[in-house]
Length: 151
Image (cartoon, helix red, strand yellow):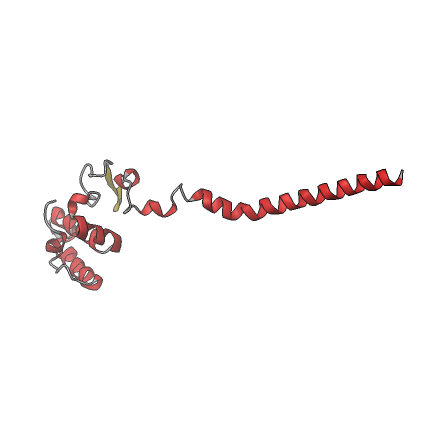
């Protein structure tokens, strides 16, 4: 789809979330296939709304446009490299799983951060185990020393 999402929803680029939602509902009502509307146009409106109603996707779209990839929910494939599918009204863009970069929602829990979290959680346990071991060693040495002194 080469048309601008703002043009599809008939809103300005400065439109608020409420204005985008209102425009989507109006256009979805007009173009809904169950109400005799154009299915292709309805899909365009839905795609535009799905992007512009999400703050992260909208920021990415405003910055890079549709060429950033991953915005199309209805094509056979995406710029992200994965295929898309629509089953029962649920749209899944499998390209999101393959895509990497700073804009990915999967970077929130990066594998690079897991060792830090593990150390934060395990370090107190390791320290306690080491201290208990040292204390036990100290007691054992003291006990052996007292036995030798008594003989």
